[in-house]
Image (cartoon, rainbow, N blue to C red; front, top):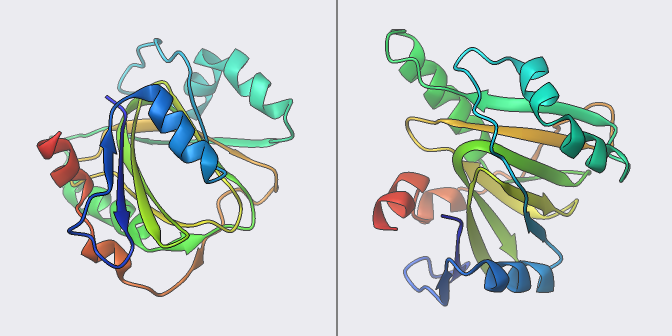
Length: 191
């Protein structure tokens, strides 16, 4: 279930809002300039589905966002492979990269087609945590300070859309604020 949790950015122990209500999530995020929509993500992806297979499965959705000017598209997908002894190291490395607070010169648009992950948006003295799941479209405006937590055993696929040809380029702030807030694992365990 998609969840929105809001905290003051200086007080991670205080929750000012926690909701699973889709209309409330749309309203709260929209007031802050963040686009959130529920789309359909009903195609079951095989464990070995590569980027081309994911994009083909959701071609109509990809085309819809390309028409909005997002010409560069890729897929971020992590599927657990507990038979691979390198899986924990690969998962931890991927998680660490996105846990660091950063901004982008481009919008960060994600359509989740499998699994879950949490976006943490720092806007106007608040941290808004959006636990996204399959079917969620989230568009974080360029310049918005944020980070992403996929958990310690990630399983998700998100189609990523960019206006710039370089794709994902992070401008890291150097802040350790991400370490002060509840993790994806804690959020999902508490939900």
